[in-house]
Image 1 (cartoon, rainbow, N blue to C red):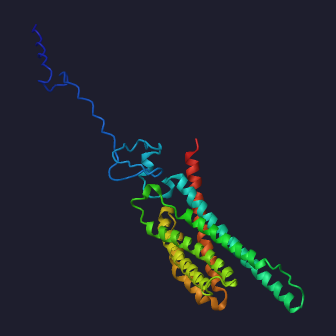
Image 2: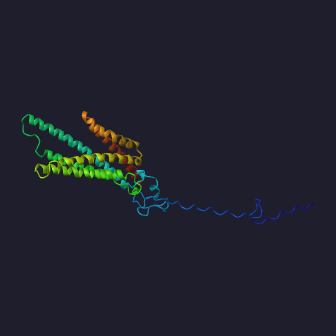
Image 3: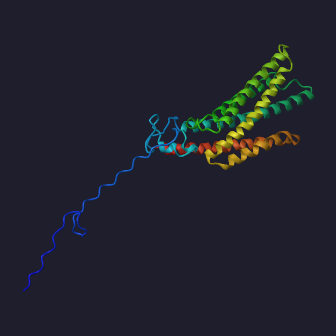
Length: 293
């Protein structure tokens, strides 16, 4: 009976390629380094420079997530306080327009009542202070509108260095202040002219300055809203603002011949502001829902 052959000798580890060879275990893969922010990016809440910070971290100044600050200029990822400021601004402007319309209606009714009383030979139906009250009301509404536009054109603290809407914002702010100051000086000049304290044409000059400032401020506001529209993700705002830049002057000047032109311009302008207010409100609610525990 033949003896069975001996098994082959076991090779040393690393010298053979058979399944029973003892090969060393591969080293564990190294974890990739954490992603960091590159370039001059800033926190959308406080404007802190984020360059070199981890993307998954938080701003060391206000604890706002770095990732949200890197998602572009959408208002959803901006500082909630900034969005609140814009929403309050456009709401105040809309309220000022509504009050201005109400004052004009009251003035028209007062003029009609005074005319009827005069033709009938009756005592004046309106108090002598009626015109003065309407004048003060107009100034207060104009101040309210200026405050609203000042808030609505506030700079975004996270995009100060790359804010392409800076020039339009500045035009709006300067124009509303000049318009308000000129309107106040016009009223003061009218009162002083009645007492022959100032030249008679000073009130007319202030009125012209206020009108020019209002026109410049309107065009600046339309340019600013066109810049703001992509941040809201709303093409309607952009298209309506572009259309009003040429349609509103035509409706106010040429359309005034048929009396409905200024009313149509005001209707389109109010629609644009109201739509902007609704979009900003949606952004506010989205941010509040996201921040809720």
